[in-house]
Image 1 (cartoon, helix red, strand yellow):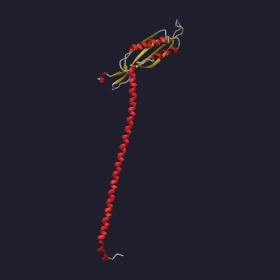
Image 2: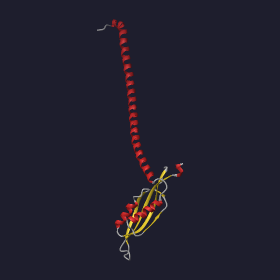
Image 3: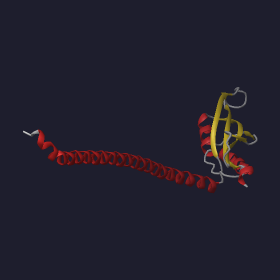
Image 4: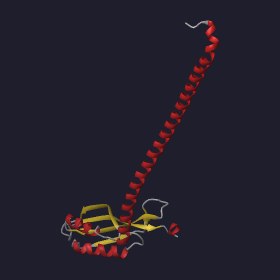
Length: 195
């Protein structure tokens, strides 16, 4: 047991122990604070890395998609789909298709070009609708005709609608009459944005 007269001699030892304990506690608190800071910085760095990696993966995917779109666009440009309409070629295609399908009579009219959808882009999708009227010995000839028309390469063709009707039996042998609307879709550069 420690006697009361030993306390003055132990005061320096007790003070040293208290100072050492306080120093250890301060060092532990300081290290814990630094560990929390480093952990927070590590979390921020890992989040930044994941975000940058996700943007990199998205950029690669976008680059692949852009390359595919550019390849399709260049293919369209090479075929003549981009730029002025090739209406004379379309008329020739319809005449050849009429001959191929052996249609006796055909009337057609091409309406003015119209935009398919509004856009602020440098290029716009446009369509010119062609109305086609004629007679058929049977409906298979209409399919032959449309197949030949849709092979046109200077425009993308879209059959909007076709209507068949049996004609009166007077002098036409029970032929069918048809009326179709075909869109000739092209890509038009926007003159205002092209310059």
